[in-house]
Image (cartoon, rainbow, N blue to C red; front, top):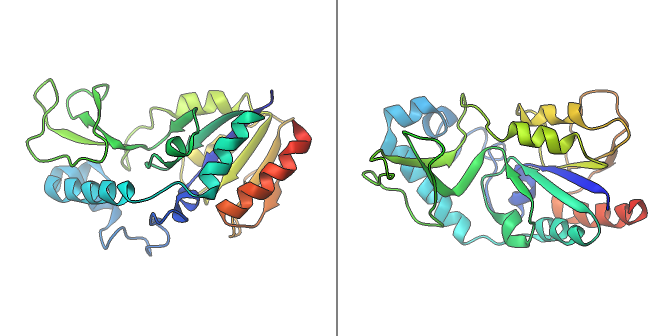
Length: 229
């Protein structure tokens, strides 16, 4: 069974009603990214940061996986599918995907501010000021903020380096280190891109482009990959 590795970004969740950073004009709900997605923002206004992610968690609770998520999960019948996502939602898992690496954290989890390895599943519940971990420190969103290390990148690099097929869906390839994963795709692997917008893919590799939104694009990709099983 061939290994199919897929890098997904905000574009695949947009069809489920989740706002993307780019579509919001560079702002998330009228907040600067520095205010709600950085260690400095957390230090300056913890209440604002908690409210921001609590609101996003509530929004996620009302969203459903779309055809793109469902189509990728269905490919597990034919391929060894590994998804590397820049998204913090759980729509891949809810669609049925079983091997998902979250590069930027997970919205439905909280973690200790004292020990980053102390992580809790909180579902769609709020994190409140005064909510503490077992060590007695304030809980924070389990999100990789700008300026923080990306702990899952090494696992993502390892998986990418084993790919027979690598597909990029719904990401501008502007955010590193995720965008740099392209460099680790084996020479013999086929490389695919699904996005309605023009996306620059670094390097001189041959790229099969499907210029569609994620839902339709995954449907087309699935049809073409059947010839590569």
